[in-house]
Length: 284
Image 1: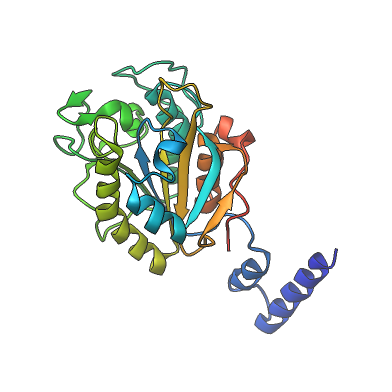
Image 2 (image 1 turned 120 degrees about the vertical axis):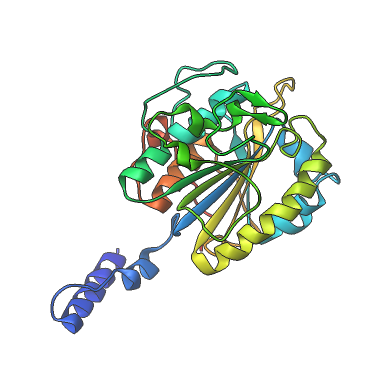
């Protein structure tokens, strides 16, 4: 009960010192900061693996020995449904948009996290590995599948935000989504192949985040559709705002991840994400 009084005194002291308004709220933010925060987010989506097939697996040494220890592991994270595509739509737009299978092409004009960012004068970039060219809208090409790149399905996301992934670059949007190809995301290839790809592609993101208050989220779209589990997936968060080595048993899903991203980037929630709990207990 003493915290509001302390904040009031802090605010009044800052106002008195400035003579009028606070120049910014950083001092107050340092006091009350306990939830999601940061200035940029990068998310990487892997494919179709149960939690226990990757966490603790000898086939994923980078994930288990390097990535998880420096970040936070969500031990009770779940996908929304099966198969893949509605999970991607849920994570991108707060809704499966009525999609119940892997369908292509589909087109929507609904609000999504990218359109929210654009409306707020912020930026989004969707990167797809092995896509033939920037702005491509075809359903399949080699190891590329549009169903794993949800921004392509929305008419309010400009084609200029649909980009080929060649590696993490110096020019970074407020929110970056990276979709590996069908081998590197472990859809068609073994866990160890995906882990090796992560070991090469995540370190530059993590290094950039350290000096830019950025958050990396690594998650899987769904558990193996043929398993009899609870659609439990691995989700790992790494960044200067995350407690290294933290583990959380909070019950979360893709809507929770989206709601957390929206809170960090200060854009409104959209649909089913609004009622999903934001990720808590891992922030510093």
